[in-house]
Length: 354
Ligand SMILES: NC(=O)C1=CN([C@@H]2O[C@H](COP(=O)(O)OP(=O)(O)OC[C@H]3O[C@@H](n4cnc5c(N)ncnc54)[C@H](O)[C@@H]3O)[C@@H](O)[C@H]2O)C=CC1
Ligand SMILES: CC(C)CC(=O)C(=O)O
Ligand SMILES: [Mg+2]
Image (cartoon, rainbow, N blue to C red; front, side):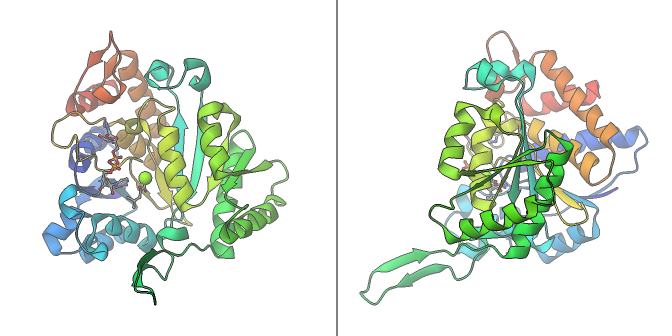
């Protein structure tokens, strides 16, 4: 198992160090794990004046999987757009062909009260958001800031999806639904956007190959509302890049915290990049208070999807569950009566529970 480790910026290095501890513990148990670190994001810009240094992309391509923290920081916010840390992330996703981004939102029974929603709304929740990751308005050309004939400046981006892009992610969505509760809700804005009308047409066509799956369609504004009104109505949510980005942050709060949401970004062959859904959280960086569980749970997804080891994935998930049962909580999921711990102490407990 060759893993490229890209900590990135902000809390990235802290949370990745915790996930690495878990990998090291598995290695001590005999798993053949090889890890190599490289820079991405602001760290890439600082080291090589590039948010995705060539050496990082090369290492990632040569590895079986990538473990990534997060990118971004206030000090980089005014760089020209190609130099911004976030561009490094977009480029590695595109460069590795990681079009299928799986963002599971599961509510652990121990954290039912950590959600800002009523326990009856969230308890038992288990949904999978499948976000298309290499197309849409995040990658569309042309884009930029231009001056119109009347002298006014205008910012613009382009949203588009090609048939093959929609088809391949739709297939992944239906295949995931087949292994779950056979319900797939495709989320778009087909009442307004041509891109979404086309998305809906193609998803409906692909659905014919999966007659066992109940397909529904929902506009994204309604989906945002339904996610907090009655989230358990969903099984798999299939959506595009920008809608999936927003809806998955919203879904994270059903689980108690964005610090609980892992992700897997997969290519055609299940080679993948694994990262928490959250960003670099510069507001809490360097304080040992970030929640490392989303990153640790991303390692579990790595074991399941890229390495075909559901047994190890289960082992990690069970260890996380155990520490929650022991009452350990980082600040973001803390409630009275529980034991508040820092980032490193949380992962030490997970390693001890493995
Ligand atoms: N995948 C990535 O690398 C992403 C990077 N970003 C970048 O991150 C930077 C900050 O963006 P924000 O919009 O503030 O989003 P963010 O996800 O970094 O933070 C949002 C809020 O959640 C909290 N939070 C996030 N992760 C947490 C954790 N593990 N434990 C406890 N609390 C946590 C933060 O403290 C903050 O209050 C920006 O530069 C942004 O571009 C944003 C999203 C994704
Ligand atoms: C920072 C962006 C490039 C992406 C993002 O917010 C995400 O992937 O969740
Ligand atoms: Mg996001």
